[in-house]
Amino acid sequence: MRILVTGGAGFIGSHLCERLVRGGHDVAIIDNFNDFYDPAIKRRNIEEVMGTAHDCGREVLLCEGDIRDGEWVTAIFAQEAPQAVIHLAAAAGVRPSIEKPLFYEEVNIRGTMNLLEAARGAGIRPFLFASSSSVYGDNPKVPFAESDPVDRPISPYAATKKAGELICYTYHHLYAMNIACLRFFTVYGPRQRPDLAINKFTRMISGGKPIPFYGDGTTSRDYTFISDIIDGVMRAFAWVCADEHRYDIFNLGESRPVELRRLVEVIEAETGKMAVIERLPLQPGDVQRTFADIAKSGSILGYRPTTSIEDGVGEFVRWYKER
Ligand SMILES: NC(=O)c1ccc[n+]([C@@H]2O[C@H](COP(=O)([O-])OP(=O)(O)OC[C@H]3O[C@@H](n4cnc5c(N)ncnc54)[C@H](O)[C@@H]3O)[C@@H](O)[C@H]2O)c1
Image (cartoon, rainbow, N blue to C red; front, side, top):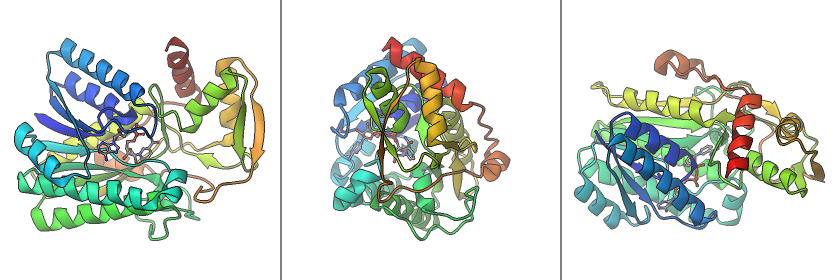
């Protein structure tokens, strides 16, 4: 199958593209290599994807451009003739979305609609959309289940991801597209975005720099290892490729939340260095905790994450040191 992956040069996208070519698929990547973080990191990710594709005898085509440009996106669909779409490209990050809400709206809502429109026009049915655990906001109930109300997002980022899920449903309803919206819970592992905690803390602790420690350390995140996420995405991909008319939302998390203070201890143990802690107040838009209920993903997709925080951070730190 030829699969179009948006955001394929990024952290999750590059791992996914490698898994797809290993599984015998050809891939067309859309990415604009923006400078949200150093684009050289994304170029390196792409080199690794290309190397894997070469080893597997598969094709990866790189289409450099912006998903906000609807005409360009449609032209790429005509040129590459994909049979399925996995839409990961986004303006990511909670805090920057408070600074630039309209930019987040353009990329995450208009950009997603451009992809849906192009897929509809090309008659493509299987479509995956990368949503986020942020849609749960300050959900008082744990663990967070897909049936919980998510109409109180507390950041523009979260609101745009919720909007993406809604518009995906509309395209499923009107055009018989098969769509799964995947709510990723804080993903980490080799190639993790440098703005995210585990990468940032490892870098700062290794360099003897103070780490920003928001709140009293009891905030918790359901950190999910990249290989578990990719396994979940592949299962959801098989699910949307079925003949039946399908739309659903799935949590992809580890379902084992880790407090911030525990995370720092694990990174200290793996790097062999003590952290210097700079205590700061909790930031607007940050939620107290995330905790995925994965019963639905388990029963429908067969999703069973396996990586403990100790093993996952160990693998990340090994990768970080080698690089
Ligand atoms: N990493 C996480 O913990 C996490 C958690 C929840 C949801 N998500 C979602 O998963 C997806 C992938 O996240 P990631 O961590 O791999 O991020 P990433 O920033 O590493 O990857 C996103 C890629 O999309 C590309 N991109 C961004 N805007 C674009 C545009 N306008 N046109 C074309 N390409 C564009 C970027 O250049 C980048 O390569 C995103 O949708 C993100 O919101 C990630």
